[in-house]
Amino acid sequence: MEFFLEISLNSVGFLVGIIIGAISYIGFKNTGSPTLFRLSIAFFAIGIGFGILAGGFILDDVIFETGDINTGISMLGIASQVVGYWFIAFSHTIKSFFPKSRYFRSIAVLPLFLVSFGYVETILRAVSFILLVYGAIETMIAYAQGRKKTTLFVAIGLGLLGFGEFIGWYSFVFPETILYVASIVMKIGGLISVGIPVSKIPLRKVTFDENL
Amino acid sequence: MAGNRTQIKIVGEILDTTMQEIDEHEGATVTHIIKNANISHGRLSRILSNLVSQGLLEQVNSKRSCRYKISQSGREFLSAYKTFREFSDDFGLNI
Image 1: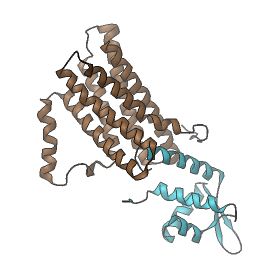
Image 2 (image 1 turned 45 degrees about the horizontal axis):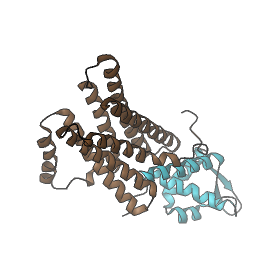
Image 3 (image 1 turned 30 degrees about the vertical axis):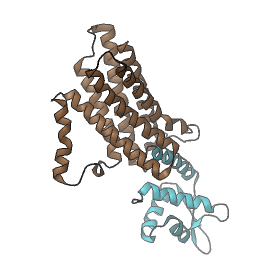
Image 4 (image 1 turned 90 degrees about the vertical axis):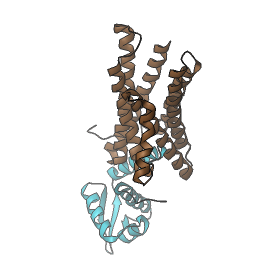
């Protein structure tokens, strides 16, 4: 059951990430916009990250049969997602998130290492969570300024991805509870919500770059 | 608070201005573009020559003044620009 949920989640993540990444890249090729270039790197990295995790679960289910995903594959997938979330946050100019004081900057990062106990995977997940929350807040601010419904969907999607990650930590503490399934469902809902702007692209009307 | 406009946003506004004028006149004048796109003459001259060399704008020389009208590839670029501006807006980002 756990493997089925993980493979479903990561497959949806792979599809959504690659589709948004491809559309952003087409946008970059057509307009030369650096924002769209960063967005394409972000979503390609997120999609590839989910794809690596899906592949890892499928490999273990079919070949290794150890009952858990290989740690190396898992870390690679999560690291790729972190790169993607970082690029989304970077596009919103991450400087404004952290306090200007050097002292506050240093202690703002401290809780991350206190709660992680040095596990790289946990650190990466914590970074993902922070970047997702930051991205969700910035997108929500953009929604408040522009009042575009699709921006709200993206903000909710990023928020759900972050909240799903947060709930996922609790499922480690309370295994065999509904928390794990809730975490996966939230993340899938978040990915679908983030993918909503794609439905607005009138693909037939856009003239694609001939060299693409 | 509104930030600085990106180069692509200025180009989009210039092309949009030349598109708006096309029904009434054969292209938009430099003065009209300066007024609509809110850009200095010096900067506009550089961008206009760049857009003409790339085939996005066509220079029309009339008796009174030099006008610029949007080309077919300029229209296609403007259409793509508007589509992807909406797309990046959806992510709370400026193109």
